[in-house]
Amino acid sequence: MADYDFDVLVIGAGPGGYVAAIRAAQLGLRVACAESRETLGGTCLNVGCIPSKAMLHASEYFDAAANGTMAKMGIKVTPELDLPTMHAQRSHAVKQLTGGIAFLFKKNKVEWLKGRGSFVDAHSVAVGDRVVTAKDIVIATGSSVAPLPGVEVDNDKQVVVDSTGALELARVPGHMVVIGGGVIGLELGSVWRRLGARVTCVEFLDQILPGFDGEIRKESNRIFKKQGIDFRLSTKVTAVSVDGDKAILTVEPAAGGAVETIEADCVLVSIGRRPNTAGLALDKAGLAANQRGQIEIDHDFRTGVPGIWAIGDVVPGPMLAHKAEDEGIAVAENIAGRHGIVNHDVIPSVVYTWPEIAGVGLTEEAARESGTGTGGEIKVGKFPMMANSRAKTNHEPDGFVKIIADAQTDRVLGVWAIASVAGTMIAEAGLAMEFGATSEDIAYTCHAHPTHSEAIKEAAMAVQGKAIHV
Ligand code: FAD
Ligand code: NAI
Image 1 (tube, helix red, strand yellow):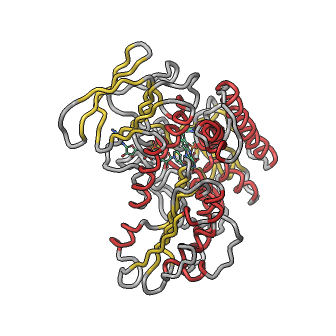
Image 2 (cartoon, protein in one colour; image 1 turned 30 degrees about the vertical axis):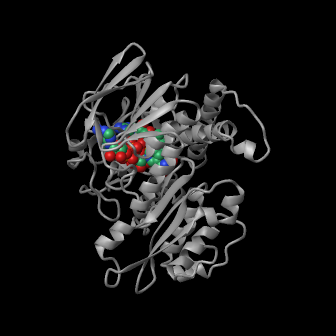
Image 3 (cartoon, helix red, strand yellow; image 1 turned 90 degrees about the vertical axis):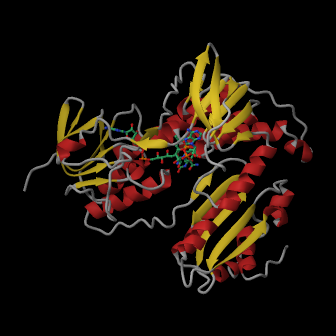
């Protein structure tokens, strides 16, 4: 048997890669992880989930003080924005968490290879000036911002930026135009709207948040409009030109029609992300990316080449940190000869706006179309947050919970929520679905009072037509 430097080499130290490396080391394997960034944690910890949530959390407080929510509770304050301090607490969170992964690597004896990995052959990878060999290699190189043809992002100038630039703006733009009404556009658009920017969101489709349940998309759109975000739906941006510190966007109806221009102080390009495979020299390992630039895998995360595995944003599926992490654990267990499994039907999605928007499982549209379950019939139960005692007391009236169940078996097929803490509430729904729960199982589970989660119980009761508080 060949003598390898490592049992496992992971390329990329994002939530997929670093978790795979740590789990493989826990299982007794000799592990190295190559990372081209200066710090560990990937997109998520450095320029994604964590810094965006730091800005969302801080700006939420600012907004509560500025928009009268605090005054309603008898707290009179006039907030003053100290943006450098807000950015400093964001950077501090990133530094602490990325440093935490370096500590975990040491603790678990994962060797951190600093540099960009590039295949030499199916068992050898060049990292910097070193070539290392491994019996198994996990590609976890993640994704990068998808460019918009004809639009040049320059994060340093802070006029046309991507998500990384939008996290670090040195001043609040007068008018920010967000291209793309997806997760990044709504989260980062919300941050700058709360801090005082006028925000316009240009979305190609006829509704924001593709992939989410139809009613949730419509209601979210209504709530964001109420908060002051201006939407230009069914509209495409065809060009952006920069003149000093201003940008001029050329837009037209998605179906074609009259062209207009919009002036902005800052343009955020957030039209999706694409997998990182360039520079990996996949061909030297006998691999190729598919037409969407992704690496195809089987149910066990194996690529077409024995000994090479792939996980996270670089493979087909939702680009989410928790999905990448779960795949990291599962791939390590499979490499170690165990049975790592990820149930891709039960991956929650959360938009961390105010209120939060969350879902797991099928949308109502998908459940109806797919004819899921027995006979394809479904039942839907809904409960408004307005009728939830805790949300009402906290001045959080917006949103609802919706449960979709199979009409004959009552098995829960999907749960969707708009609520201040929907991201936390959705974990219960995921657990219930993982255990194959019926809506009745949820309805007869005692939920603490007064909590937002009681809205999930009531929505489950509404599936049977017997919600109490509406
Ligand atoms: P990544 O995190 O992208 O990590 C891959 C790593 O590999 C990178 O550090 C990269 O430098 C490195 N790399 C690439 N090529 C090489 C190479 N050849 N050699 C060595 N290293 C290499 N998801 C959520 O679930 N919740 C959120 O709240 C959330 N917020 C987000 C906010 C923003 C602004 C963005 C941009 C993304 C957000 N995401 C969120 C998505 C989340 O960040 C990704 O789904 C997640 O990071 C994917 O993990 P990964 O390990 O597959 O890849
Ligand atoms: P996205 O795919 O969520 O949204 C992109 C939006 O841009 C879509 O609504 C699309 O219709 C629109 N669009 C595409 N081309 C357009 C054009 N030319 N003009 C106008 N609109 C256009 O992508 P986004 O927001 O960039 O996020 C990327 C990824 O990062 C997502 O897959 C998401 O999963 C992940 N992410 C997750 C977060 C979370 O879990 N809270 C937070 C931020 C990002």
